[in-house]
View 1 (spheres, helix red, strand yellow):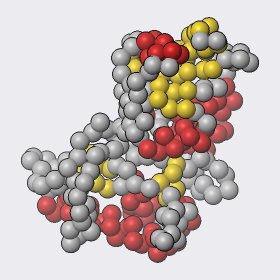
View 2 (view 1 turned 45 degrees about the vertical axis):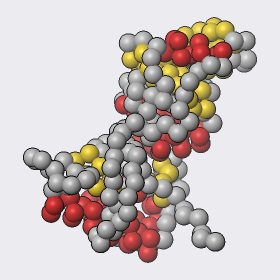
View 3 (view 1 turned 120 degrees about the vertical axis):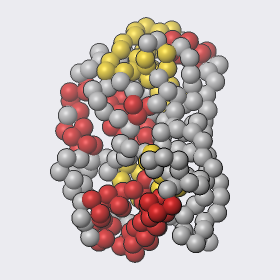
View 4 (view 1 turned 60 degrees about the horizontal axis):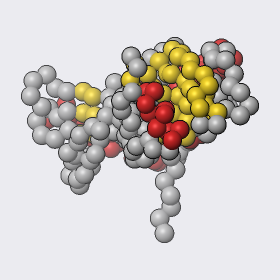
Length: 262
């Protein structure tokens, strides 16, 4: 039996997820996984050694080298042959800012951990018997990209009735940090549109139940959740980070993809 692959630890999901050549791209897009992006960021941008990168990503040095070679090959394919590049997917987990291993001075997660007390005061505390539901929110509707949402609407529910509604800004946080924001504000359930795999993992770690792939009115969605009739997608992905891809590798070691965001 093959050994299960260890999830690669990454600092945070990339801010930029798509790159295109100037003009008409040639061939199908190339997909660089988030863990491949992280190796490139650490080795080529931050000038870490492969051993230092291995410690930060919680994997072996030889695995770092394998990932690095695969990533460089994909980037070369895009530069030389004018292919479009997406950063998406991969087997990874987000850094939680733990001081014992995080060496990044401006670590976003570490800053959040240090400021958690500020986030706790954003909302009034929920009642002892309440469930708190958060919805990605924009102008009364469910905002469709979790990592880019600027507001949440919060509903406190007791005995199948909404007893309190509150709206709060996300204060510029995104992706994994938003899970910490929701946890600090006592959220039990999140209803949203698209959401990336890393953010989903962060929600699981925070103990927040996810109902993704939902659209329409935020109020109507919460009412349906209360009644147990909410339609959602348990396999939801975010078009900003994930694509439905199929194919086989070529001589460069890349995967060929026919990609479409959800």
